[in-house]
Image (cartoon, rainbow, N blue to C red; front, side, top):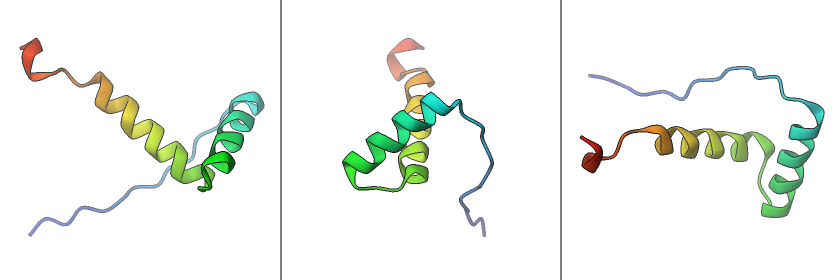
Length: 54
């Protein structure tokens, strides 16, 4: 049986980038960490080759 678990890690951002992230998260009514996780996942999905690229 395989269980998937979310992983945690620490990342350091420049102050200006964090301020933008914080402002966008506040505007969307969500925690900064939640928005950061969403943006990372969305960016990684964009990097994956599409079926038509094979």
